Length: 373
Image (cartoon, rainbow, N blue to C red; front, top):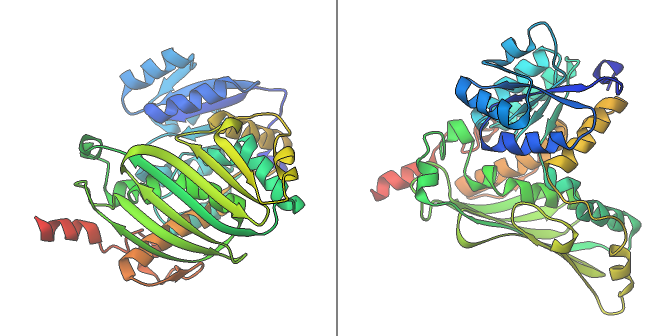
């Protein structure tokens, strides 16, 4: 990254919020905790909503568009907090204005859009960072350190479950459950946080076999998916993504040679959500785990890392390139479930129908519902 990306730590980092709905509040709360940050502008097509948001969080001004907000300067970073289909065009617009941007998940609707964002970022003074906040809690960082030290031994078998519950009225919101707006169901919009953490910890995946279906909700996308993933290391993990599970949990179990490490939480974790069970004769692993401060996962932890990178001129954490592997796994889960085949990493290229839309433009579960009507 060049010095054009570097922000002078002696001046406030001026942040704009694009979209002032529910998730924007998490961004505002996180940014209020960061030193040297000015909440500069709230951007929304609905003036009453942006004004209410600005009043709640002490944002300096409001605007109806990013172009209006950026006119004449006065912005350094924007948080894109809108429905998923607008993430891609807004990120392109921000890069075109030379701004840094933080994108809520999913960062784009397709692998094709991800590649376009990579190309646009390469030609911009701005940078992109994707919200995958589970990477930034102290538990994940400590686990990475223990892995690298060799204390845990080889990665063997994993379980990654996002078992959530969303009722039918949740899907009756006009923009939900549509391929062209959300990009997919729980695989793209809910479980992606948890299996992003799995990939962050266990490294590159190599192939996946998956099933997905619409079991209980009226929606165009799936409401559950299950996958078996092999990693380049040889380790094997299962991933289940559901929004039809009454007892909600986000659960990660990682079996190593020397210990089982478990994370049981819902929407975020601190150190008390982790459990380490040593293999016989490996009790020292528990002592190694108990060291260090407890830093919860969440937007605040990721923003601290993003702002540090902007001040230092280093690459922003969770770049589009970093996030591509996670999005590629989501695409492969869909491709495998629709095609009935095992999908290898790298197999979904420009020639694949799954490169430009997660369902390969086949709308399988919409057709399934029509047949069962």
